[in-house]
Length: 123
Image 1 (tube, rainbow, N blue to C red):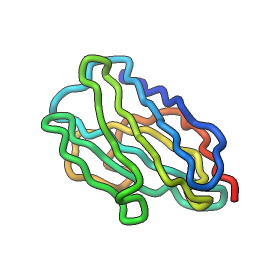
Image 2: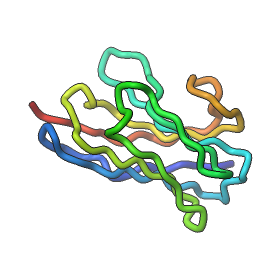
Image 3: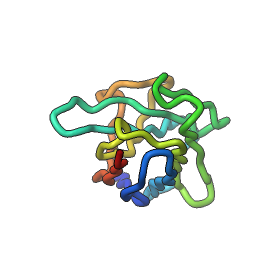
């Protein structure tokens, strides 16, 4: 069973940066997609970014384009989310997910989930 562990969350001021990491307990196969979702209090979980393990193809939700970058390190079985120019509306618990569908931007397309890491952006 694949387990995902997120880290790197924290509190920053508007305009600051954070880098989230998601490490998998097992080797990630080329057919997998890795994604980041986020969920703010009282809101539904929403798609943020995804990367296809083979080839590194990526896509993002419109609200983070130009600010966030998703990347991977195959040797470390790890996916990253570099977040720059953070805004208060980015405040949420960020979740890492893995699945076998590409492209995919909905929760049910991902079978494996991390525990989440809190990102707070002050105004």
